[in-house]
Length: 203
Image (cartoon, rainbow, N blue to C red):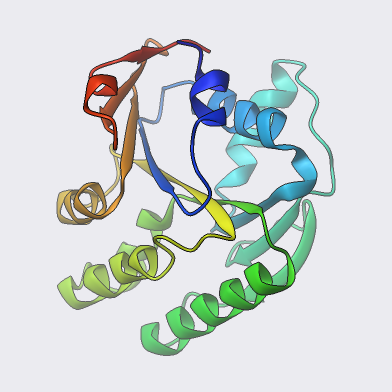
């Protein structure tokens, strides 16, 4: 099955965990999401400029994407895209996560049928001393949007960098889990349809 066809079968309200490595071709998966759902529907929650490695990779590959994709900037210095909100991740984690959660909910309410992409939230964990309490709070951010019928959400997590506890919590919570290996192969690790688990998707 092609990845594009698999994405079309994902229902509104579902959240998908995409596990990748530093060397895997995850920018191509990002691009496929934009092409399938339409770039105008996308909202990137961009942690510490994580999207920039994707943008560079695609540009070097001569793959074009729109320059004004909507973006919530969670730290970082890049002004790429259309920045709709800036959040300081260095502040008290309770205040920071509450503001982010509230802002995303408001955005969904005003923009139904949004496809959101959360880029590399695992980068926030070292900022808060690898605190188990923060890991749980960050995981709860994912729980907050599960089943919300006005959106689809994709979490990109770099398993080379992420705390294993954090990845395990997300794997438990999310209804779908995809894994991209260094060769570019995409495997369905978890699905609401048991016959899809173990399936390899083609880009």
